Length: 339
Image (cartoon, rainbow, N blue to C red; front, side, top):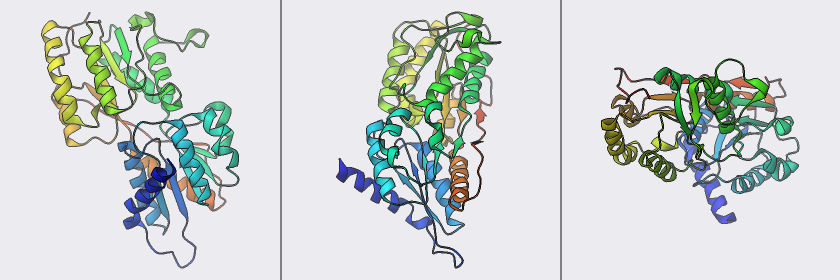
């Protein structure tokens, strides 16, 4: 395990070596790192590009560190331990499991400046970081819920496909979805599954967890669509389903076509990173009804700016929220029937 993690550090350094520049005459160059949930995920690649580009303009370095493959907090903890041994000038961490990291690697954080990136600590551990940069995850979830209301104004049956229940950003987005669909004030702080409020309810088997690996996510979606269960809206608070847009088209398009003929086709609303042409084509062809996009590069750039200020002993805001962007098809699409 140690050998594979070390090779991952070398890969990360090589990836961004072209963006490093010589030290500025007036100051020593600083070294920062983004510690990802996984380095082969589009969001973290884009965020690291933004961070490295911003660092380049100041003669500094920003690396992407982490492991490939399915997210796991134990693997991230090992990466974090090795990063702390590198004596970096600051770390931006995308939190996988708040309590576990706090009780393990972060016990030896010391004076290394630490911020969180798009996935924050739980409230009990937020004292460990100086700032958070990323989405307002509750508001982002509310936007996802608002898109579902746009397509299904009378409500319906909902299923959410998500990742690990320990990932605070995803859980907060789910809370925002439910809050939006419940409508009005939430009585008694209710955060559990929808049970008919405002016309919305959730399938008993949902949320579908551990859908944060592309093949697994596609399998779970295909199984849900083929199950015969009534589902009117499907929402993903992450972008795993369309990492490989053509594979999504190959597997899911025939199923959607059959459901369309029966008038039982659900609305599909997805979180996405900065979309490419193939992903936008899914939208225009009606295979996805809406994207809510995360501006990964801007999150990376702002993370560098905050880390730089911390390294220089300057004050920073407790939270920096980056706006999202809605993508809808250019032409209205017919989506099944109101049930």
